[in-house]
Length: 358
Image 1 (cartoon, one colour):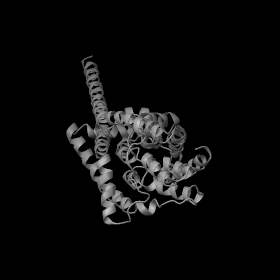
Image 2 (spheres, helix red, strand yellow; image 1 turned 180 degrees about the vertical axis):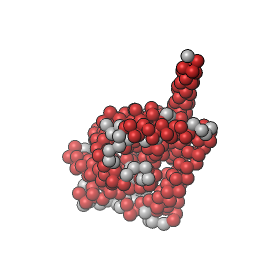
Image 3 (cartoon, one colour; image 1 turned 30 degrees about the vertical axis):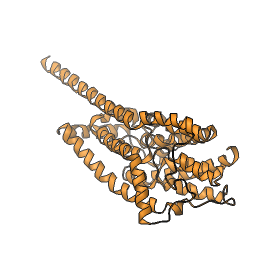
Image 4 (spheres, one colour; image 1 turned 30 degrees about the horizontal axis):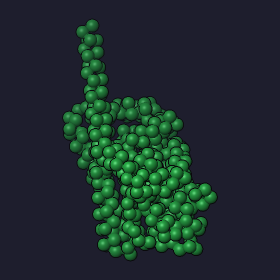
């Protein structure tokens, strides 16, 4: 009886610790998102409704073309980009490290560990409050994968942050038009839930029991170390892994953005050739949250057609070379090839649809 009572008390104490750790994670996430995303975007939405703009294009400013490739062009773009995203990037790394030490692995596996439509749907739904760009959401997706969250659920969270960002959809309606918003929403849903779900097929089959056993082993190992030690170790490893590739790739893309976004004349304004080019370029290029809107607005003011604009509408925000470098060790290569190929293909289809309906 005494032994059974002791086991019961230990179970209750462990359950309370789990609840406390999850509550701490949620409070940090809510506070961080309120400061970095929710409150600033509320004010930005009001401005967008009045001014019908959310600023100049980060690619070219108010000009038709970006600066010629140079070290200065690389530095200028990187400075503008990081000035816009650094708070969200810090929050993404923080949450990506905290999810590894505060959220129980078995709980995550039960909710998001299966290669099922349900787990994928939950991952996509969980992305909606984040409203992060692809690079800022990537460290959280890495943290999820380290806890053995399924390929589909982690992808849905990563892709859903930029693709289904509610604030971006609101800005888009005020600045571009509701037709752009509907087009983005339709293809964003296909990408977030459809592509993410089918990506599970490229990952191989892993039995849920094995995943639970592995998670339990990790919990037992982690339980021997203090929480602060585990968190600092996770934070350092994630930072060391994310930051160097992130900085170098942003500099590289910023330097050569003039070649990636050439001036468009009337003969190419709505051409299939430009649609194909922007499908690949948009997939590789990196931008802050919602920056695709002023980029498209500026380029259309200099003659860009609705087809290529619709391509950039989808391909610019959802993935990028830096975000792919951040996550590539934590997803099978064939999964990332499937995702990037899907982004390019859906971008082309979006462009064809944009030529018809916009």
